[in-house]
Length: 414
Image 1: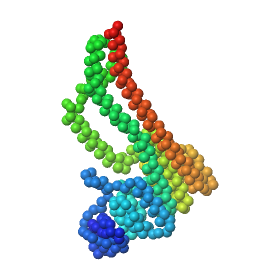
Image 2: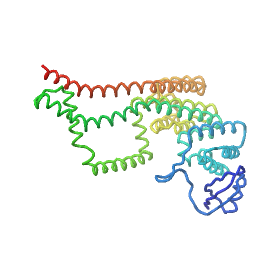
Image 3: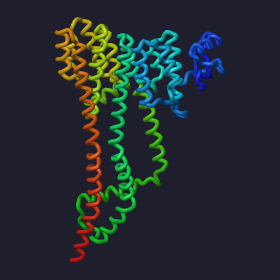
Image 4: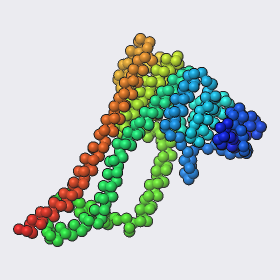
């Protein structure tokens, strides 16, 4: 049966959640084993895994996830049982939702479920890559090592997001102000300036091509102004909202996710970042599994799922089939559309020397550094490029308006 409960911890905090148990008494015994004192238990209920469209969205900050991952890695490395580690970390968690998640995860572990499956129930906290990396650690018996790498990886992802947001903040503000100002000028100022230019030079006045284009754009904006077209605008916004909703749902399906990941691999700049990150993850995870004694086929299956890109994962599955038929891994990787030639060459060296894990670890170090340098470079160049682009647009508008006025004024003066 499924029960909904509220319980009090030894520190006096109140936690709530749902659990499967044979009876109410069985659930009470389970909660007491976790140092929880039941306050309310009711039959029925569904697990809460995040906010809905109209409910509060439950989330865990990346910093909280990093701290949890590092602490769990340390406790497991010290030999503390997994369930006990989770219970201890649950009590230390400052995020109420994280406490709820860890309570559910610890109950699943005590029931015999793998840690990856327990994490997989909360995709809004543990990403698909995170879950598959944990699964790789469990299967390879290197969970503490994988968790340490995961903590570093989450920190790197957070750092990348922070750098991109910081680099885009100022240009975004400028772009927003510029767009608002542009439409304001097109709707209210340029029409009046057009009348002035016509009055100064007459209806047959010859204007520069860029000024005439500006006047045409202004006329188009006036004709399509928002006020007489509010119903159409609302319909368009609703249509875009519905399209976005179903588009996101489609991307979450296996077929949609595969196509979306394929599109990302064709997008300039984004493609480079994704490929470098994927190669680094592949090299690091595959090396760790091989070093732990996992077979090549099992390591390929788990590693492919941990890359975070379905297109590259499918390519690794095809490579696994060739390995199953007796070919060395370096052979299909050398014909890969996404892995750079150096990976196949280093794999070949590792196969010949029997040191695949050592060779791939060096590749992982190299590409992780490449990703860091690439992101730093992009963050440094985005802001000046945006400012130059927007400045050029503002200058063009000013020249289109002020140039003809100056010329016509001179003609009148003479």
